[in-house]
Length: 371
Image (tube, rainbow, N blue to C red; front, side, top):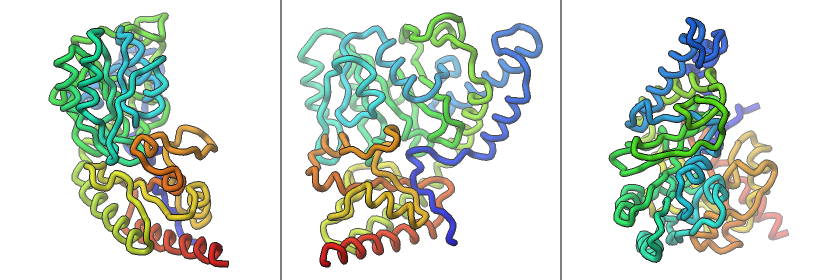
């Protein structure tokens, strides 16, 4: 039997050996990081070492890194703990941003999936109430990159804070909190080869953040509860390795481009959503004309290949993508879209297997229609 091929790295990526070792080492420690005795101090050192590594990934100060249970909590904390009632988000944000606050104002995107800066400026100018603007660095479904620095410049002119969900971008493109003009930035460990269940909100020094989880002084009073030291240690190790992996992204981009070229040559009407925009090097969202997304995911799985039908946060459910809808993609085309996302464990043969299997699935579907 051929080896299984994993092409769903945007959902989660395999844990790095360095991260697994860091988790195991931290699990062997005894002590609470808030205790002042030697046992507690050893755990505290492990947490603070990890904080330094995570901060370095986004060129921030270690003191600016606030550990959370994951990207979802970090996004919720940013939007609801910033002290601003007016929340402005792009229409293609992850659902953890779209649903974090009640009644957010939404900025449209163009057909490429890129946020409309003119629409954002009009929206910010329409009210003098200070706002928080949340625009992601890269879309989890299409890989489309957003002009985050331009968003920040606009927001600054209108006195708005800026939050960026960088969960998908971290480790794939360089990030710099201050250079981008951001006030807050979200990260998640399991997207970069760390363990699930740990994330971070990076907060610029000038931002006052109101804790959502209260009851203790952990994380400088911004997030109560004993820190998940093993998870945080694994996060730090993964961040350090991810920062050294940027050179490999060029290889993934070449493989991704070759995959798209091969598939689009096999059939008329294949669409690669966001293809003409700047994208993450590892991500392709493409359609198989006449074959719905769920059928494709199952068919690929039967052939030992893991792909997805979009975001992986709604267990067992395949629904129309709000991202593709915001881009103006017709429902019949959006219903045939899958996401292929490469990662550090991907090899050239995996891409070849995908292309060959795509052709076989499409041929079988065509034969059924003809019959």
